[in-house]
Structures are given as C-alpha cells and as structure tokens.
Image (cartoon, rainbow, N blue to C red; front, side, top):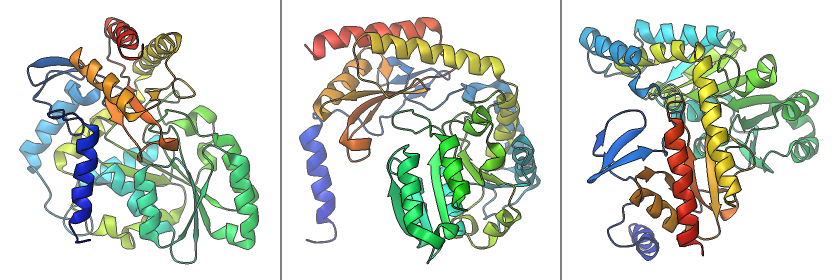
Length: 395
C-alpha cells in the first residue's frame, strides 16, 4: 500500500455511508446571526451543536474588548510565548485564572487541545505511568503519546478499576499521573471525582482533571466539578479551554504546585506555538468576568438542560446517563444516526453527528449542546421536532 492509499480507503468509507451531496462533517456556516441562530445554505437554522454553554460569543463586553485589543495591539503576536508572544494581557489572564481558582499559578495556551498536549507531555515522561479514563478526549490520548510515558486505561468512571490498576503498579504509583474529565464530551456524564481523589491519595499519585466541558457549567461561580464537589484543593492540576463557556479559543492549566511554571521550559507544544492573539486574550478576560458573575446564566442553562433531557427521555430516546449541557441521543446504527441528523437539519436544527471510532463503545450519536441563551420556545421546538422524527424515521 502506498502512502496515500489509506486516505483513499477513508474516502471510500465515507462515500459508502453518506449520501451524495450531504456534507455532515465540517458543514459550512454561511452566516451567524447570534449565539443560537445562523444560516446554512438557504436555511436559517437553530444552533444546537455548539459548545457555547453560556452564550458569550455575542456578549457585547467580549466583542468590545476584542475590538479594542485589535486597535491597540494588532491582529497577532507573530511569536511564541517563549519569544515575543507574552504580552501584558497574557500574563494578566494567567493571574486572573489563578485567582479564579485560588491557585498559585496558571499557564495560558493557544488552544484547549494544546493545553492537554503540553501539560501531560510536560508532567509525564519515559519511565512514568499515565492512567487515563477509557473515554478520555483525543487531546488527552495525544498528550500521553507525546509524553513517552506508559499509558494504561481504566474503565470509564470506575474508581474501583482505577484502584486495582494502581495496586498492581506498586511503588510505581508514585510516578503515575491519573487523568479524568469533569464532564465527558460524548455522553455528558460527570467523573466520580470524590472516589477518584480518594484512590489517588491512597497511592500517592498525581491527578489532572480536564474541566473543558464543566467550566462555567458546574459550581456556584462556574469553576467546574471541583467546585461542585468541594474538592478543588485535592486536585493537583486542572486544565480547560476558552472555546466553550468562554466563547473564544485557547486553553489553560492551573495548579498550586510550584513546578507548574517549569512546564514553560519543557513543553514543546507551549514553546513552539504562536501565542493567542491580543483580541482572543481580551475577549477571554471579559468572558471570565461574566462567567464568574453568571449565576443566572447557569440557572437558565440548567433549566434548558432539564427541559430538553426530560422531553427526549419521555419520547423514548436512549440518552446519556445523566442530564448535562451535552445531551447525546444514542442510536443503534450509523444509518439511524445519519437519518436523525439529516431530519433535524431539514427542520432547521443543527446538531452534531458522531460516529465510531470517535464514540464510546462503538455507539452512533446525535449530540446536542444546550446553551443558557436558548429560549424556552426554542427548546420546545426542538422537543417537538425530535418527536415528529421519531414517528417518521424509527417506525
């Protein structure tokens, strides 16, 4: 097989699954009207497939901050954080994140993917162990591979299985990095953080928690699962992203361990990537302030979550195990999932289609992302559309 033949195989597999002319992955969004509405082709659609949990992409404070930063500092830094790419805004955002989490220090990265890539590969290395939840995000897997550490998976959300694997490691548990997520991106379920922390402490291991989908969503001030469970001081490292509740792009890691700052000198993804633009940093700083003050936004978000989750459950759809802003409908076959995705789009609702191997246990998913700025009427329309499609597609 030549170098390019494997890509031809991918194209053939896509063609066999997807109807001609249906652009499922990377659907072009022609115009964006608000945090919840846009245009695809000739159709006005309702966004239900973004991670815009607090609806801050159109917040006036964020847009004003970004525009001012472009005017004052230009469109980009044209350099890495280790060269010319650390502006005063980057350092200010790091201080603000550290203060938000009551942690000693923070590092800001260019993307959330890079935050995991850089943090994991900087913390772990050859001779170390990384114990990861089996449903971990691709950025976690890739960070582990880059680290050169031995990778061991434990069963999803199974602290007993985690404990068993640590017990087998013996003294090597002390050089083990455990990784879990606040809310998992495919099925929307939380990690059993209290149980994981208890096991971590018993074996003197180190714990990294990815709060990408739980930042702004869980906890009174939006810190995430660490705040909801009261375990902030028991988690060693917290990573997350700006591209969901903060409505931008970028990532971070916070910790009370003084060694965090040394990652700047050993993490290749940090050293060799251009830094976030001034506009991104400025809008993120404004969004973080809104997130901290966003108690009402979180209340509205969870009201919308419970409304849609209960509607779909009553209709008989198989869903993820618990309500969260990630509401996954689990289908038996890729063809069923595609039919539901296409039917929703034809009715003006954009969601995400997720197919194996990117899904847990080989399931096919239609994945909804609920926002605080969805109206009750929009949620009701979504529920009625799912009801109509269940009668027409699955009978």
